[in-house]
Image (spheres, rainbow, N blue to C red):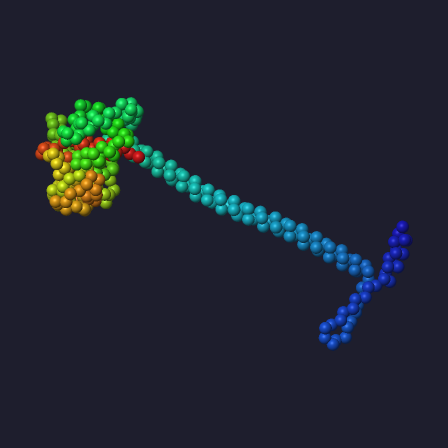
Length: 305
């Protein structure tokens, strides 16, 4: 077998391949001869190179895809970490607001569970709006039988879909809440255990918030006072006046008729004030009365959303 292979090698040694190279210029063409074994070797080397190139291209494509995927994973991971930090920050803010909510409820003396139960018990199916018209319009006043009954009827009215019609029907009566915010000081009468009086309510809100007329009427005073700063007083008729104090700026002047809900001032800290809030009073027949007797949506001041 070995002898046959050697004979074949010796026979093939004489087989040559001539390669002629002809230049484009006038130079002499030249040629060289290589053996068929060399040609076969070149074929093998070329095939191996092509295979290596194809394999390398495939591996490069896979590596590039994997690198792109890893880059996206890193970007998603970075975004996830940022979102996680935001969630943690929002959770901290939530717990802080929840604690502040409980503090404010404690300061206001509001029992969350009992107030919710009262709202559930009140309902609106047994509410007769004609009785409310009879009490408000002819007498130009609201008589409270008890604080509990008032709060129940107040909640019923707040939930009633006819509240806007009643507001428009009783245009001159100050039933509209001047500004939405936190109730920080309630109405207080002088008594044995209460040596100091507070003729109205204090509602805290953001400085510059629009203050609206609680009812339609004529502005009888718009100016500066020592205690209440920029003060505006509206006469609603029937001996009823409404006071709006500590304003940053007055938007109405005297002898101007204003509609219910019309902006009349900007909330501020003028006068003897410790912070931005509205001091709101209602007077009837020359005597300050509890605004709860008139402000039908009064609960908005103590509900913290």
